[in-house]
Image 1: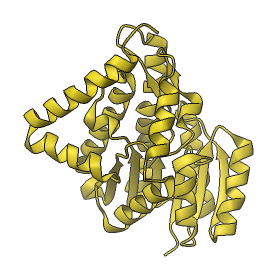
Image 2: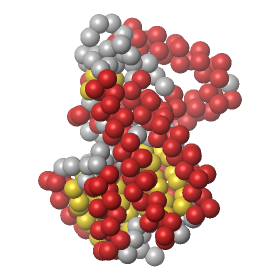
Image 3: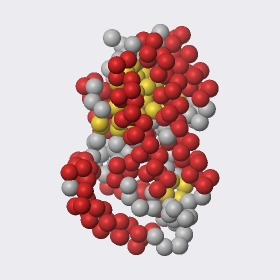
Image 4: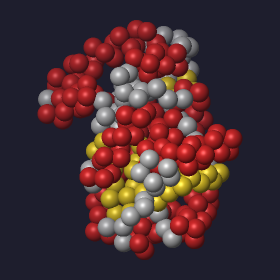
Length: 271
């Protein structure tokens, strides 16, 4: 059966990689994004990769946009099989230095954007008696490094929502996968907000040093969705640290405290 996929933030980065991965399987892939120029480029890339591409303008801060996409895809494709709630932004800073405006900005996109995506498409999935949500969280929601409280909270919220909906919707034939990558090269820093000078450059360096690409993460997502897996944890080192946190929290606390002291020495001073 040809899969029908909708991806928020699908015009770049991980969203684009996921779109092209499904396109190679001949899927119908709709990408929603606020960048129409880049969206048109990826729409064509989907077609060239072997899928059926469709770009729609969609801002996850507006539930009306998501409702409209759902209705359009139900009319045009007869429904949707997979919704990837991928759109997200980044921020960093201390608790006293990060403005409430920046808190509201990141929570509105990173967590409420996922809430809106799930809220808009759950009635359709229930009507179909099947569907899968793939919610893009982050290892930041599990590891909780310092000077990233707003980002950590937003991604921890995605994890909590995903775990909740996995239980709530399972008997309706709806599956949920929660994706928690660590650093890998994307354009996330393009819109990053930070009170700490140089933080975005440091994040870019960590991304470049990663042995994982967006295509690797997309492949893990495709495999997990095919297998019906909940957790998608692409990075081996961080996956092991998460296991330590679960089974030996005192050891994890010591390890993270040592790393946190280094991080705070580098960025914990005045902005």
